[in-house]
Image (cartoon, rainbow, N blue to C red; front, side, top):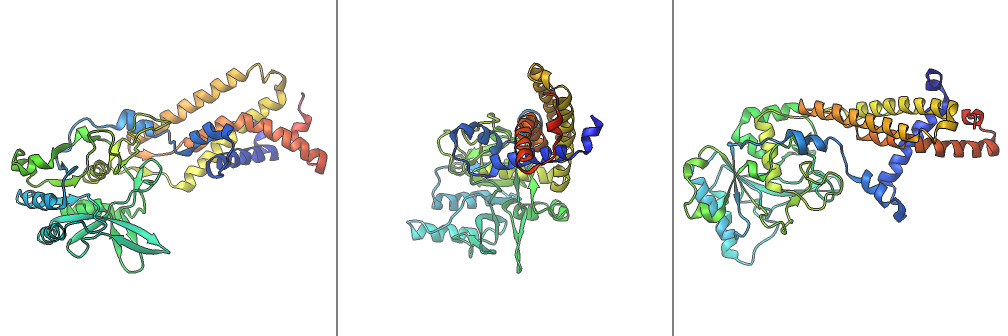
Length: 393
């Protein structure tokens, strides 16, 4: 096998494997025959298994209280803010996007006045970059003392695996919703987040809705919730969907029970923010391998695998079809090993994504068939030299 490590065909076949992956992932093919393949390559990361099956924490995070404002109007939220503020909470985070005025000017003024008189309130906003310049969307931007953008990375169509703690332009540093909350709740943890200096942080998902203390806004206003429960806590106001039909602020996450074909979004935005806050407060950040190193390891592992297959392809080609099941079994075993290693590392909060080498290895045998046909064609046409022209078949 060693002699096939340093031949041109092994290098070209490895490149072909990654080009095919890129084609399925990025090129908008309209051939329906490729739909299942493109779906498989669209937004799957095998480390999601670690979150959905292993990393999930069953105990409550008692530092965070969530109030569901599902049907509350602006005047109701104003009353709710006053009630919660009187409970001596640490910070109130309002994960409700007010992008324009309501039908009631009185309700707008009422809510704006309460925001202005609540110094420990952080209001969510939407941050959009237009031609390299930030555009902040928040109707109450002049009334709120503290704001933070609630955008997630990949929220338009994909699985929410990461977020941006800070967004910088030439004039100012914009804080995310959770960063702004943490700055007020615990300055030491906030500085720890700053010192990491990561443009993107992976979210260490550990809890679903049932692992946070959630109350309905009406129960809080009706004094059915003990004020002592809220004292010195981070209180988040947001939408919780209890019906399964209101998915306006619901997203796909690695905790989704459907690993491949995620049919229904599984987590409300306010719960994602709660997971981020839990991660920061527990100092349980995920340490991600740099993308360049991840790619180099993927290329190296795929290159070794293709060298083995080239050896088998050249010297045992007549038995290749008979032993096809054995080869698939080897690929499956390698997949299990890679996934297991990735999950084990993630349990220790170290992230290495084996998805790319897994895809390349699963495609490698088919790539060799394609590569042999292609190289023999250009050999006849351009006298291209290839080792496959000397194979015994």
